[in-house]
Image (cartoon, rainbow, N blue to C red):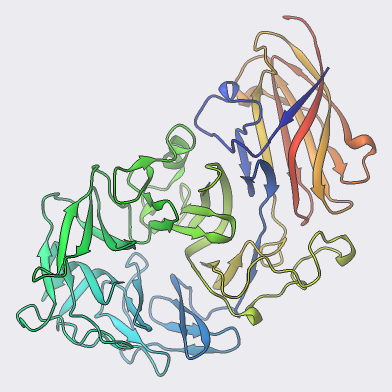
Length: 512
């Protein structure tokens, strides 16, 4: 009997539900694969875009000025700017003194870069010289988060002369074009600067991110909308529905459908209205069972616009940097898992064409490549995802078949397959694979069987190799028997591949 399993990329990975309860086209495990447009496909890797950094980069941000596309990366005590050709140290005269868990925040206001580590006074940079102390910033004052909103800077969780105001939001005067604000003086009634404590919820201020015409302020267990009034009050603050907040600075990303937020026990999406969980029932239990308790504040959330994804990057149990990501596709609403090489942060932005190579990093024969000559999925004006690593690299994601020259494993696995009857014993005789890939691409195929739904009791067949365009009739002959069946597809080379369906050749073997 032949059964076709269609649209292998329609559901994605579900780690929380019992495998035998999933539809046949869902997956119970996997790594470095994604599910979009109804297909299962291998994720692309990463390509180092600048020379090895002289410090471990804990923050990266795009900045454009004077016809150049800079990427700024910051370590604990030094800051650098790369334009794809030249690296320039822009460390301020008095170097930063923050520790690993003092998260950098900042952004670009009126064409000027602003950086803040929560320990030192904030800095700004306009494309020349080195970072300078932020103009007009009050003496002996620090803030956990500073980011641009409209034509002002907004600071959260402010410390004045050693006294912490954990619920305070403080904003600057309006900045003139091409410059930073000249004043934060709330006593000067000729300025727009002001401050307010949002203390209705006792949890601490964490971070912020604009959404349309409002700035969303995140506390640990609540959210507020900051919007311009156009009157004497300058800004209005409204508490948003829900008792959810932000796990740590940098744990929110913007998508066309709203902010995706990593909270203390969920991943939610909202557009200034009621928050909705996007992970409950699929990956929520898995995520929070695997995230390290002591270093969870080093997690970060970043969008990957090229693939319409959000990456929830986190340190696994016992790890000190991000080693895994739960990946959500905001169009297909599918979840997948990506293994990470000790990432410390990620950001999106434009990248100078000279910073990436289209061919020399592909690691497969030109004659076999499935892409066109000089193909690049993105124009220079489109945004890419860049990630920085403990290994002192800054890399572009989703651009090559390796991770900085090293091979990586991609696999998709499904356990608990009943083929319509959980009480009947079945014997798989083979799989017919239909993969879109270059000639000779190798995929390892394994099937397994168990008499009970426990995935740990699966007896796996010896692996068989399927080669695209080589294996006769696309038929992989392999055998497994059980009430609950499994299969696993593993990439064996650096080639990209994609599949929407496969055929299962099986026979019924009775009830026992």
